[in-house]
Figure: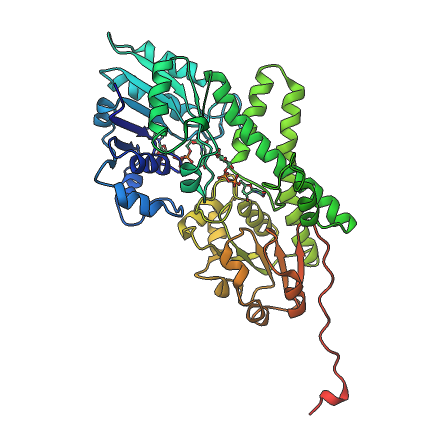
Amino acid sequence: MSIKNICCLGAGYVGGPTCSVIAWKCPDIKVTVVDLSVERIAQWNSEKLPIYEPLLDDVVKECRGKNLFFTNDIKTAILEADLIFISVNTPTKTFGNGKGRAADLKYVEGAARMIADIAQSDKIVVEKSTVPVRAAESIQNILYANNKPGVTYHILSNPEFLAEGTAINDLLYADRVLIGGENSGAIEQLCKIYEHWIPRKNILTTNTWSSELSKLAANAMLAQRVSSINSLSAVCEATGADVSEVARAVGLDSRIGSKFLQASIGGSCFQKDILNLVYICECLNLPEVAAYWQQVIDMNEYQKSRFTAKVVQALFNTVSGKNIALLGFAFKKNTGDTRESPAIYVAKTLLDEGATLNIYDPKVEESQIFKDLTHPSICESPEQVRKTVKVCEDAYSATKGTHAIVVCTEWDEFMVLDYKKIYDGMMKPAFIFDGRKILDHEKLLEYGFHVQTIGKQLRKPTPPPRMTNNHHV
Ligand SMILES: NC(=O)C1=CN([C@@H]2O[C@H](COP(=O)(O)OP(=O)(O)OC[C@H]3O[C@@H](n4cnc5c(N)ncnc54)[C@H](O)[C@@H]3O)[C@@H](O)[C@H]2O)C=CC1
Ligand SMILES: O=C(O)[C@H]1O[C@H](OP(=O)(O)OP(=O)(O)OC[C@H]2O[C@@H](n3ccc(=O)[nH]c3=O)[C@H](O)[C@@H]2O)[C@H](O)[C@@H](O)[C@@H]1O
């Protein structure tokens, strides 16, 4: 038997792009993506997709209505499917045991219960969400606790390694696809799907627990590199070394490699997975291992707070009553996702210090910015946030009349702005804080900006020419 019908539970940043690519590459397979959210499914069926991801629109347009469907009819989709991906969210728990660290598996459990309630025939159930090691065991227990006679489930782990902003390319040209499981027949069926476009040598099969742990390990090691270079950026600022030069020199060692060595104001999505890894290590009574990975998270937090403290300090230790422009709100370029975005931290700190903010991001909706900044964990007074934050249409209107600019996301368009024009429209002295190291700092200094960035000391701006008698007309 080969797979003819796929259902994906969860139409998010993973379920949507992954299933769109599967549908595109496997025209003989019907792919149905379902979600509990009526609004999200309506967006997937509209002209404006619920997530921004380069190339995604093209792939969806190519397949939607042919062999790719988005629906809230979860029941029919599960009944028809031979294979079901669980791609639901696994956020950090906000309550009870493991609060603030453990992954909240309620959505995974909910998905497993739905399958158990609805399924009438054999299913391959594929865990695509990022989960703690041995989560597949819990899924299996739920499925078999409600077992109907004659229905067999095979549970596989198939973690996703795509990064937002490059999801389609990551899916099309994956370094590897990882499939963990115990049933060789089920593994083979999933391999066959990927083999439509991924060379067999790049499809790795392991036992279930190795697969689950490899996902957390990959994210932990990526995060560790970012934390390592960020820690060195502080040393650079204190010594006169330049972190970009250090990263280049270090990265040319083929054992180290040059990717993922970009110092910045701090990372994102990683955080929930490393927190989860730390929690698992503690539960396994491995405190030294837990402390090791905790330090990776702590360094990320330190980087955010260090950068924001520098902003306040440079602005004469007070931002109260000052108007500051935040360029970028997404956690990285080419996505509208703001989950764990360092911009939220920067905005919160500046608002707490009494600043007013103008925020501009090319892809984050105004409603999302206010949702993030008025979240109870961020602010006590949503009214106050609404009074002190303005979401702007473009970078020029956001920066006009402000005392300072903070670049929070590395959007390409921020590199090519007319900074002379921006400087002229700002209060003086005009400050710019490049949290992503994307701007031409020497040019900015020439225009008269006070410039600060990560991992590099910059000289003072050239002072304006002194007035002499010759200048009087
Ligand atoms: N965002 C990313 O770049 C990556 C995320 N992951 C992992 O993939 C998983 C999903 O992440 P995202 O897609 O970003 O989350 P998301 O929050 O964008 O999407 C999850 C969707 O699942 C839906 N959902 C929850 N319970 C459901 C149920 N029982 N039936 C149907 N739909 C249900 C939610 O309504 C939501 O729309 C997480 O475990 C995440 O850690 C893995 C690799 C990359
Ligand atoms: O499991 C996940 O959620 C995904 O997490 C990351 O993907 P993502 O968070 O989308 O984006 P990254 O490109 O990894 O960036 C994460 C953060 O680190 C920052 N970063 C990244 C690289 C770098 O060199 N420096 C740096 O500061 C980015 O700006 C961003 O804020 C991983 O790269 C994916 O492989 C993984 O599938």
